[in-house]
Figure 1 (spheres, rainbow, N blue to C red):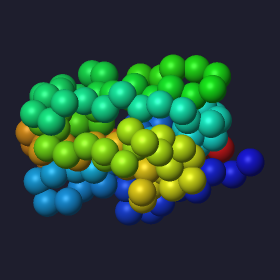
Figure 2 (cartoon, rainbow, N blue to C red; figure 1 turned 135 degrees about the horizontal axis):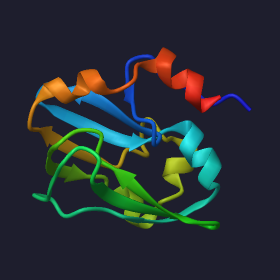
Figure 3 (tube, one colour; figure 1 turned 30 degrees about the vertical axis):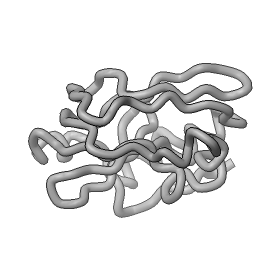
Length: 127
């Protein structure tokens, strides 16, 4: 079961993805992660304005079989959350990289991005 991995994103060992947009970064969970979780039924999004350090809990995703913490791939401040997920958490299953994004962070520094895996490195742990 091969998971979709997008080339233009950065990845964490805990299966979060990050897309840099200037000084901000959009965060979600990977196709591999949503398949492992199975049917996602609830998402607990952080408050706008919350600050997180790289590796800290960012939000929680609940599926029919488990509850999983989602960790911040970089340090920053939450500037936007995907409110659509409150009513349609299953969007993460159908569109983990596009409509199923979780939060947008204003990054403290873009230097942390370089410590994240590129698609080739992530492919080695996701398959």
